[in-house]
Length: 245
Image (cartoon, rainbow, N blue to C red; front, side):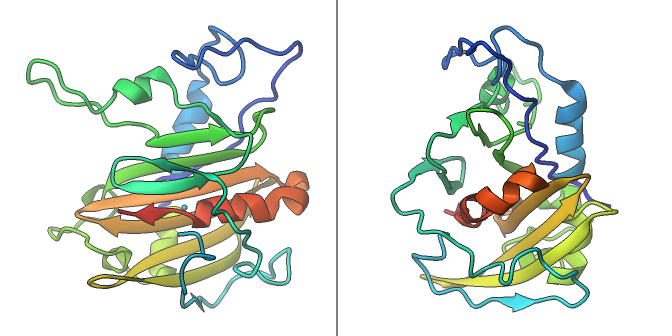
Protein backbone atom coordinates (compact mmCIF):
# COMPACT_ATOMS: atom_id res chain seq x y z
CA UNK A 1 0.00 0.00 0.00
CA UNK A 2 1.47 3.34 -0.99
CA UNK A 3 1.82 5.32 2.18
CA UNK A 4 3.53 8.62 1.68
CA UNK A 5 3.95 10.99 -1.15
CA UNK A 6 1.28 12.65 -3.24
CA UNK A 7 3.00 15.73 -4.55
CA UNK A 8 -0.07 17.08 -6.27
CA UNK A 9 0.60 20.64 -7.44
CA UNK A 10 -1.14 23.46 -5.70
CA UNK A 11 -4.23 25.09 -7.24
CA UNK A 12 -3.44 27.81 -9.81
CA UNK A 13 -2.72 31.21 -8.35
CA UNK A 14 -5.65 33.57 -9.11
CA UNK A 15 -5.11 37.11 -10.41
CA UNK A 16 -4.38 39.72 -9.24
CA UNK A 17 -1.05 38.96 -7.59
CA UNK A 18 -1.80 37.76 -4.04
CA UNK A 19 -0.26 39.20 -0.92
CA UNK A 20 1.88 36.59 0.79
CA UNK A 21 3.01 37.00 4.36
CA UNK A 22 6.20 34.90 4.64
CA UNK A 23 6.01 34.84 8.42
CA UNK A 24 2.52 33.40 8.38
CA UNK A 25 1.81 31.68 5.07
CA UNK A 26 -1.68 30.43 5.86
CA UNK A 27 -1.98 29.76 2.16
CA UNK A 28 0.80 29.55 -0.42
CA UNK A 29 -1.56 31.03 -2.99
CA UNK A 30 -3.74 33.70 -1.45
CA UNK A 31 -3.96 35.46 1.93
CA UNK A 32 -6.07 33.96 4.69
CA UNK A 33 -7.30 31.12 2.48
CA UNK A 34 -8.02 27.84 4.27
CA UNK A 35 -5.85 24.88 3.41
CA UNK A 36 -7.30 22.20 1.17
CA UNK A 37 -7.81 19.14 3.42
CA UNK A 38 -8.37 16.79 0.51
CA UNK A 39 -5.03 17.68 -1.05
CA UNK A 40 -3.22 17.40 2.28
CA UNK A 41 -4.81 14.04 2.97
CA UNK A 42 -3.90 12.89 -0.51
CA UNK A 43 -0.32 13.90 0.17
CA UNK A 44 -0.25 11.97 3.42
CA UNK A 45 -1.79 8.91 1.81
CA UNK A 46 0.74 8.67 -1.03
CA UNK A 47 3.61 9.96 0.60
CA UNK A 48 12.96 12.41 -3.03
CA UNK A 49 22.60 14.48 -3.50
CA UNK A 50 23.01 16.35 -6.35
CA UNK A 51 24.36 13.79 -8.81
CA UNK A 52 26.78 16.35 -10.13
CA UNK A 53 28.57 16.36 -6.77
CA UNK A 54 28.86 12.58 -6.26
CA UNK A 55 29.51 9.40 -8.18
CA UNK A 56 26.29 7.34 -7.89
CA UNK A 57 26.05 3.75 -9.04
CA UNK A 58 22.52 3.31 -10.46
CA UNK A 59 20.76 0.01 -11.05
CA UNK A 60 17.26 -0.55 -12.39
CA UNK A 61 14.26 -2.72 -11.57
CA UNK A 62 12.43 -4.78 -14.14
CA UNK A 63 8.84 -4.14 -15.11
CA UNK A 64 8.95 -0.39 -15.66
CA UNK A 65 7.17 1.25 -18.55
CA UNK A 66 8.99 3.09 -21.31
CA UNK A 67 9.96 6.48 -19.88
CA UNK A 68 8.88 9.67 -21.58
CA UNK A 69 12.52 10.64 -22.06
CA UNK A 70 15.47 8.61 -23.33
CA UNK A 71 17.21 8.49 -19.96
CA UNK A 72 15.99 9.40 -16.49
CA UNK A 73 19.12 9.78 -14.40
CA UNK A 74 21.08 11.30 -17.26
CA UNK A 75 18.58 14.18 -17.24
CA UNK A 76 19.99 15.86 -14.13
CA UNK A 77 20.96 19.51 -13.95
CA UNK A 78 23.82 21.01 -11.99
CA UNK A 79 22.19 22.30 -8.80
CA UNK A 80 25.28 23.71 -7.04
CA UNK A 81 24.10 27.29 -7.56
CA UNK A 82 20.63 26.61 -6.11
CA UNK A 83 19.67 27.51 -2.56
CA UNK A 84 20.25 24.55 -0.23
CA UNK A 85 17.60 24.10 2.45
CA UNK A 86 18.65 22.33 5.66
CA UNK A 87 15.94 20.48 7.56
CA UNK A 88 15.79 18.00 10.41
CA UNK A 89 18.40 15.46 9.33
CA UNK A 90 18.40 16.28 5.63
CA UNK A 91 19.30 18.88 3.02
CA UNK A 92 17.77 19.56 -0.38
CA UNK A 93 18.35 22.00 -3.23
CA UNK A 94 15.46 24.32 -4.13
CA UNK A 95 14.88 25.40 -7.75
CA UNK A 96 15.23 29.12 -8.49
CA UNK A 97 12.08 31.21 -7.89
CA UNK A 98 10.41 28.46 -5.82
CA UNK A 99 8.68 29.77 -2.70
CA UNK A 100 8.55 28.26 0.78
CA UNK A 101 4.90 27.28 1.25
CA UNK A 102 5.21 25.28 4.46
CA UNK A 103 2.08 26.06 6.47
CA UNK A 104 2.14 27.38 10.06
CA UNK A 105 0.92 24.09 11.51
CA UNK A 106 3.96 22.39 10.00
CA UNK A 107 6.34 24.91 11.57
CA UNK A 108 4.84 24.33 15.03
CA UNK A 109 4.30 20.58 14.66
CA UNK A 110 6.77 18.39 16.44
CA UNK A 111 6.64 20.53 19.58
CA UNK A 112 5.01 19.21 22.72
CA UNK A 113 3.46 21.27 25.51
CA UNK A 114 3.21 20.13 29.11
CA UNK A 115 3.96 16.53 28.25
CA UNK A 116 1.40 16.28 25.43
CA UNK A 117 2.35 14.01 22.56
CA UNK A 118 3.92 15.98 19.74
CA UNK A 119 1.96 16.18 16.51
CA UNK A 120 3.96 14.89 13.55
CA UNK A 121 4.66 17.32 10.74
CA UNK A 122 2.82 16.81 7.48
CA UNK A 123 5.79 18.27 5.62
CA UNK A 124 9.37 18.65 6.71
CA UNK A 125 9.73 21.11 3.81
CA UNK A 126 7.50 22.27 0.97
CA UNK A 127 8.23 24.63 -1.92
CA UNK A 128 6.29 25.57 -5.03
CA UNK A 129 6.70 27.46 -8.28
CA UNK A 130 5.24 30.99 -8.35
CA UNK A 131 2.02 29.77 -10.00
CA UNK A 132 1.70 26.79 -7.63
CA UNK A 133 1.63 24.22 -10.42
CA UNK A 134 4.98 22.62 -9.54
CA UNK A 135 5.78 21.37 -6.05
CA UNK A 136 8.85 20.10 -4.21
CA UNK A 137 8.15 18.44 -0.84
CA UNK A 138 9.94 16.46 1.84
CA UNK A 139 8.27 14.26 4.44
CA UNK A 140 9.81 12.24 7.26
CA UNK A 141 8.18 9.15 8.76
CA UNK A 142 9.30 6.54 11.32
CA UNK A 143 10.34 3.45 9.42
CA UNK A 144 8.11 1.22 11.56
CA UNK A 145 5.06 3.17 10.36
CA UNK A 146 5.81 2.11 6.80
CA UNK A 147 6.88 -1.45 7.47
CA UNK A 148 6.18 -3.57 10.52
CA UNK A 149 9.56 -4.30 12.03
CA UNK A 150 11.30 -4.23 15.37
CA UNK A 151 14.53 -3.09 13.76
CA UNK A 152 15.55 0.54 13.34
CA UNK A 153 16.09 1.25 9.66
CA UNK A 154 19.60 2.51 9.07
CA UNK A 155 19.42 2.36 5.28
CA UNK A 156 16.56 2.30 2.79
CA UNK A 157 17.49 -1.30 1.95
CA UNK A 158 16.09 -2.22 5.38
CA UNK A 159 12.67 -1.41 3.89
CA UNK A 160 13.13 -4.06 1.20
CA UNK A 161 14.56 -4.21 -2.27
CA UNK A 162 13.97 -1.47 -4.84
CA UNK A 163 11.06 -3.47 -6.25
CA UNK A 164 9.61 -4.38 -2.85
CA UNK A 165 9.82 -0.81 -1.54
CA UNK A 166 7.95 0.49 -4.59
CA UNK A 167 4.78 -0.72 -2.87
CA UNK A 168 5.44 1.84 -0.12
CA UNK A 169 6.26 4.83 -2.30
CA UNK A 170 4.48 4.44 -5.63
CA UNK A 171 0.66 4.68 -5.51
CA UNK A 172 -1.37 1.87 -7.00
CA UNK A 173 -2.53 2.54 -10.53
CA UNK A 174 0.53 4.64 -11.37
CA UNK A 175 2.59 4.19 -14.52
CA UNK A 176 6.15 3.55 -13.37
CA UNK A 177 8.63 5.10 -15.82
CA UNK A 178 11.85 4.33 -13.97
CA UNK A 179 13.22 2.90 -10.73
CA UNK A 180 16.86 3.09 -9.73
CA UNK A 181 19.14 2.36 -6.81
CA UNK A 182 21.70 5.10 -6.19
CA UNK A 183 24.63 4.43 -3.88
CA UNK A 184 26.48 7.43 -2.45
CA UNK A 185 29.84 7.00 -0.77
CA UNK A 186 30.05 8.38 2.77
CA UNK A 187 32.74 8.23 5.45
CA UNK A 188 31.51 4.95 6.87
CA UNK A 189 30.62 3.27 3.59
CA UNK A 190 27.76 3.69 1.13
CA UNK A 191 24.27 5.05 1.66
CA UNK A 192 21.52 3.81 -0.63
CA UNK A 193 18.80 5.98 -2.14
CA UNK A 194 15.79 4.66 -4.07
CA UNK A 195 14.60 6.70 -7.04
CA UNK A 196 11.18 6.32 -8.68
CA UNK A 197 9.63 8.29 -11.51
CA UNK A 198 5.99 7.70 -12.32
CA UNK A 199 2.80 9.21 -13.67
CA UNK A 200 -0.68 9.24 -12.18
CA UNK A 201 -3.86 11.15 -13.08
CA UNK A 202 -2.17 13.47 -15.61
CA UNK A 203 0.55 14.30 -13.07
CA UNK A 204 4.24 13.40 -13.27
CA UNK A 205 6.32 12.62 -10.17
CA UNK A 206 9.97 12.11 -9.28
CA UNK A 207 10.64 10.65 -5.83
CA UNK A 208 13.72 9.73 -3.83
CA UNK A 209 13.68 7.85 -0.52
CA UNK A 210 16.43 7.22 2.02
CA UNK A 211 16.58 6.07 5.65
CA UNK A 212 18.66 6.83 8.72
CA UNK A 213 18.27 6.24 12.47
CA UNK A 214 14.81 4.73 12.17
CA UNK A 215 13.45 7.50 9.95
CA UNK A 216 12.56 7.42 6.26
CA UNK A 217 13.13 10.63 4.29
CA UNK A 218 11.06 11.03 1.13
CA UNK A 219 11.55 13.94 -1.26
CA UNK A 220 9.54 14.36 -4.39
CA UNK A 221 8.72 16.80 -7.13
CA UNK A 222 5.51 16.94 -9.12
CA UNK A 223 3.98 18.85 -12.00
CA UNK A 224 1.24 18.38 -14.57
CA UNK A 225 2.40 16.05 -17.32
CA UNK A 226 2.22 18.80 -19.95
CA UNK A 227 4.69 20.93 -17.95
CA UNK A 228 7.11 18.07 -17.31
CA UNK A 229 8.43 18.18 -20.86
CA UNK A 230 9.84 21.65 -20.19
CA UNK A 231 10.58 21.51 -16.46
CA UNK A 232 11.15 17.81 -15.80
CA UNK A 233 14.93 18.06 -15.62
CA UNK A 234 14.71 20.85 -13.06
CA UNK A 235 12.16 19.02 -10.91
CA UNK A 236 13.93 15.66 -11.13
CA UNK A 237 17.20 17.35 -10.17
CA UNK A 238 15.57 18.91 -7.12
CA UNK A 239 14.18 15.58 -5.93
CA UNK A 240 17.46 13.78 -6.49
CA UNK A 241 19.35 16.47 -4.56
CA UNK A 242 18.00 15.03 -1.30
CA UNK A 243 20.88 14.31 1.08
CA UNK A 244 20.55 12.59 4.44
CA UNK A 245 22.81 14.21 7.03
